[in-house]
Length: 232
Image (cartoon, rainbow, N blue to C red; front, side, top):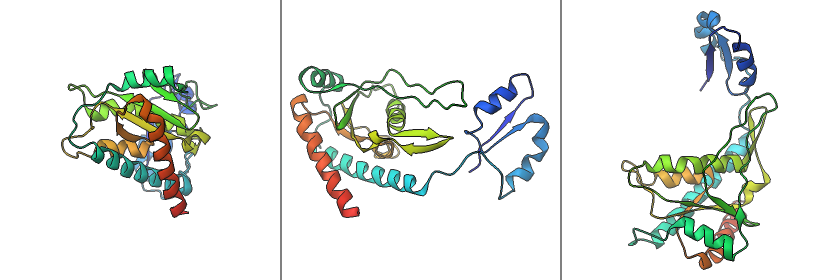
């Protein structure tokens, strides 16, 4: 799929085109509009955007499948429960009683861009081998809308950008768990939220007592290592 940006021609258009050149396959000014059809039919369209490396794609899909499978196992083990402890209270207790601290979310700041993509208002904590987030789902909000900032945070934590191409950071190897106050479901496709979260890098787990979290993280990490060893 091609992404082409059509710009009006004014004093700021050139600056904007330079800043976003790695975000679109091609940038056209309005005076070039008539060439759009030709460009769309050009199989060899020159572009600043390079495809995502195949190995990065493979790793992302494999990780998403594994996270989704693990989320389903955890949720099935909790069948019969509809409401769990408040995740933010559990996070606070983990910081107070265990070796967890607040996560610093990096930004994607490209040397050719004037602004960085920033994410705020999310509650995440970490220790040396895991990242946890606490998510509560209000009745008056879409489940996917609630999950969106956490998926964005996971992408920022796990990938950097090099001329528009994502590459895995070292932190992508750490286990990431979303502690939730209920099982997130959507009406038309009940498992869509946990699939989306899994592809972004999260395992979805209804909230456990704070003292049980470290052992749970160790258990899940061991399971994932075993699956990775089998795949290798």
